[in-house]
Image (cartoon, helix red, strand yellow):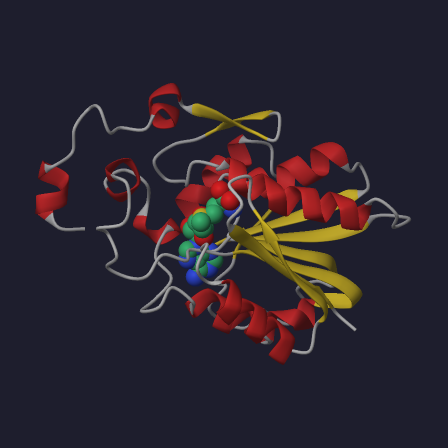
Length: 223
Ligand SMILES: C[S@@+](CC[C@H](N)C(=O)[O-])C[C@H]1O[C@@H](n2cnc3c(N)ncnc32)[C@H](O)[C@@H]1O
């Protein structure tokens, strides 16, 4: 991030969540620092989808919250599904420290842009809210995001799709047959990510909208 942007910072733009040091997500109050993305209401749709999937499945359910940041997605799933056993992965050790302070236990440094380590999984669901802003596209970001939230949580390559390309199909190998794959997307990325998900051979591929009616989640199931 260039100096110009830093000079343009104003106290007005500093997110309230970082001032407070905590933020609410899915009814949970989570610790947040400038090392993690502030959990967004739109991401709650990923939790809704996971809980609907887990509802009728007997026994312990193994979940991978990849690109976990504060741990908000996995923690919300675990709070509403006692049978969920969540593994939290992120490339940022600073973010994982925040996740740990929020009560996440099985925490791993994982690079989602590389294929999964042998022995990781199997999981019943892979949930991921990856960075998906186009590199350098700072003009369309609110100043509070651009100047304060961690760049590692935001940018997903030249077209914003690097993480989906890395996950599909390589990361499907960590899922059990019938397992759920679900990712958050940028509102204008549904067509591309839906196509990648179908091309990877998943069943029941669907796009779901956020509270504002914009495309926000792409999901499918392992055959
Ligand atoms: C959009 S944030 C999502 C955080 C959290 N899951 C949420 O929904 O608020 C993306 C997260 O991906 C992490 N990340 C960035 N590059 C990564 C990589 N190559 N492998 C794994 N995690 C990565 C960032 O550190 C950040 O925590």
